[in-house]
Length: 165
Figure 1: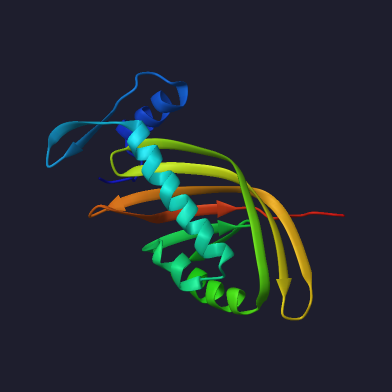
Figure 2: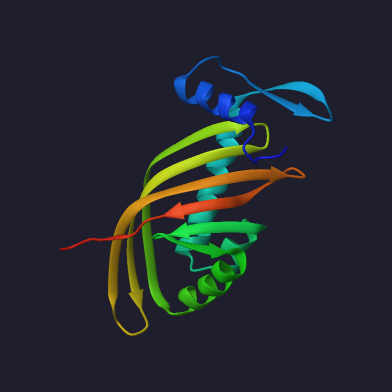
């Protein structure tokens, strides 16, 4: 399923957000399917928490395995490629003694049989090897895409704001 500016996907996303109907139409091999949004939401919730587990375990390879090779991310207003995120994740995770993050207000919006948006609020507490404590909070949005039955991230956005004691 193409995700590039599809009017049908936009209409589906609006319908889901507004709660119009309870089924998401989709196509596979030209045949119309009915997709249960609650099933998609349950699958996405599972991969979101798998991402969280890899993140808090400082498992850079586990995080990277959840990204498609054409993944891009907007981090604090700066666009990053898959390669930049993969390299940065490895370096960042290796520099930490401790990484705790709380994710709240998870909302999942299925936008088709093979795509969904998840958004949440995070609060991070990070201790570096140098003894620096970094505490931030902010919003994150994920665009999950299923290819060949596997969910991975295609796009993400995160903004970090310092938590002042």
